[in-house]
Length: 178
Image (cartoon, rainbow, N blue to C red):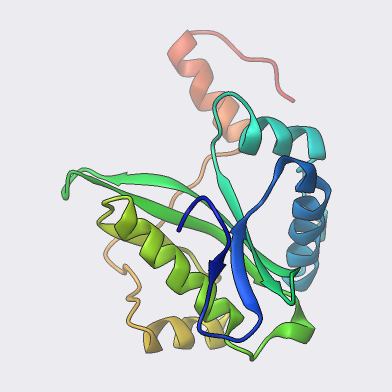
């Protein structure tokens, strides 16, 4: 499932891994997603960063494309996670995006199902993702497919100056801020 094009139950819709030559397309999908979510100003990704972090010596993430009639109409970016309680790996879905004109055809659901299967294929115990609190339609949809929000803990994030400041505590010195 994970190495080649996968057929879905939807006619003419397939899912396949992204190739190194498709870095510009990955970046285009990232920008489209950010525009849809009203956070285009937050995109810092570049083709060089994507090349290094998705296809480099130590890949940090993977990308698959959802293709209709052979043309990519959506993408999913994901990476491995690990449950200490289960003692098993899993998959964390960072982003799933289907172009607006292609929504409502089941493509997003097919991509989620593909990633759920990939989680099991890799002997994973969990498939997880986040959702914006304001995105009520998505939250309701995720409930309808059996996903449950984890209300017993909140996601915390360090980035930018706060990340640098905490890292400086370990090193006992101030780290140059970007």
